[in-house]
Length: 244
Image 1 (tube, rainbow, N blue to C red):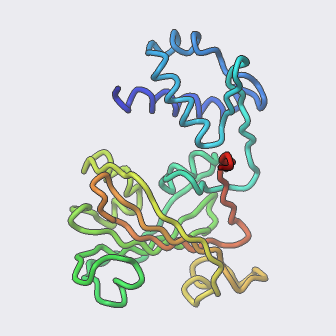
Image 2 (cartoon, rainbow, N blue to C red; image 1 turned 120 degrees about the horizontal axis):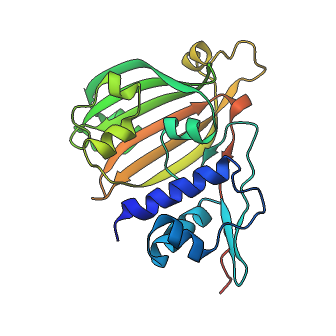
């Protein structure tokens, strides 16, 4: 079945949950109602609901239906389990977000860059340094490396908007998975300069490093996101697996 259909339904239901059209702990409309509303098959609805379950928005209850378990957070949060752009995250958090490109260069990976990112020595890369703002506060400093052969035509202008939107809608790249590591690291002079850390009683940041892969299994992106600690919050939906 076309992904676009169930993904469209998933996004619409997610929006209604986030906007509290469906209240917390309320049951979503029945499967029959959703099939009629969206003019689609039951399987399409079930795939959309499965995505909402995966992202921690709803819980399915046998014989009862699907319950909304999403609670809006006062502070902006980012997802661990999902892959979303900064623009998508800002929209989900109902915040005004924008991005400033501080540096945009083309380079070739040497041994140092290869060791840091995982790209082979000799890889042609775009290196982008970006500062993300939420509600006019500089909260995230990103160091991005993109593989040129997968992301041709990338520009600073595109980087100031949404790189993922360009990859998916213009280049038709399918973004599949991302391996992430979270650490706490000492603040650098660059962090202090751009993240307005002077007035804060912190000397460290939350750092999320990620390697992201396309549908061909090619790592096309390495990103290190450096988050101001007073606004850092990651959320995930954990599921306990049965013991053997």
